[in-house]
Length: 128
Image 1 (tube, rainbow, N blue to C red):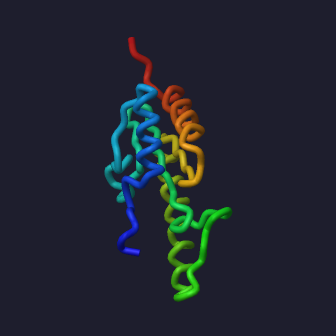
Image 2 (image 1 turned 90 degrees about the vertical axis):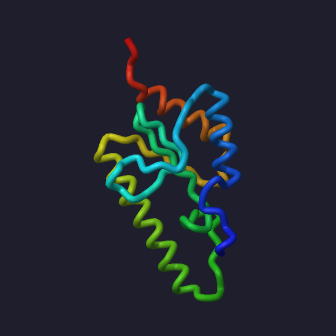
């Protein structure tokens, strides 16, 4: 498992490319909140939108999650802890006024990009 990428995965890169083509500028793998030790995959600081591209295995996708046969109990607890941490991250960011977008790695990048762009454009501060 140590060879699995935790950042810059293909779904993340595809999404970032589409967002960039749409004229959006963002930060990559940043903490939306300084005191919260959790990085979002794509961060729009001005509009306060944090995007997480969750891997089906690591975050327990209801459609595609697979469960290892070795150490099944340990993996089950690990993935459940990830889900609890994700929910806590969502709660803390929303309480601080952020829009949180969580997508699965298997979702169509173009659909995700449209969803993210809409949220960013809604939350973008007005310019005079």
